[in-house]
Image (cartoon, rainbow, N blue to C red):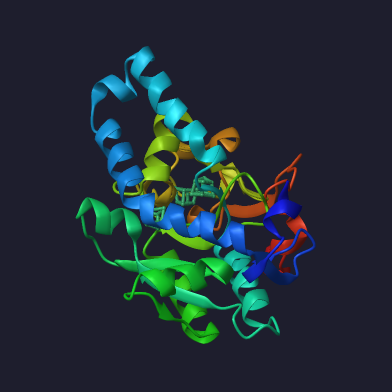
Length: 283
Ligand code: SF4
Ligand code: SF4
Ligand code: SF4
């Protein structure tokens, strides 16, 4: 199907091999239409997430699940650690095409729900996503690589999860690098309610239980994880590897140096090939 969308070249995207290429005009305008609809989608998701019927009742949960199932058409994200996000941005910034660029604007969830918390400017659009959002939303500004990498570090310190967002279940349609919390971010809240919208990334955390200082002394992994993958037990933090999506937020601040990131066994790379995010810092 994608060849159909590539009939008229317009804008830029990552190809499956990780190179930057031009994107089809229909592809571009489909996404531009989504960008215009996004506020309504976010408000609908928030309306549902704030009602117990949709998060606790089996019928309501099914309806919320169906809304997130529309992520076949709407964006969905792969969770990645900060060094992997930096690798993606370096590759984009190094592309020869002048218009393959990076931009930043206000968090779309915060803006449309009018629930602001710092940092507000954290929506790092890339490639054709940057082109579209800068075209239709004046608050987006072009970002150079140094500032982008600096922001990634700040977002990590602030405890925000890096998520590479795609459109239409295609690994070729990455358009934004989001940095999410669990209070306002709709995709994260949907994931925590019904297990959809986000996908485990190419890495996952691993813990050496002997090195853990315990929740009383440290406990940062319990505070920083947005996916409830940690619990306190017998004076130690216990990592549920099956629930870890691989953001690495608990690794960078672990006071006992008990945690590291490892490659996720069986990671398919269907949406985000491992080769595109591999970096020596994580190997
Ligand atoms: S997905 Fe996350 S960063 Fe993106 S707009 Fe929503 S809260 Fe903001
Ligand atoms: S962050 Fe590290 S040291 Fe702190 S509680 Fe978690 S595993 Fe233990
Ligand atoms: S356990 Fe750590 S790496 Fe895994 S999702 Fe939670 S904070 Fe991220």
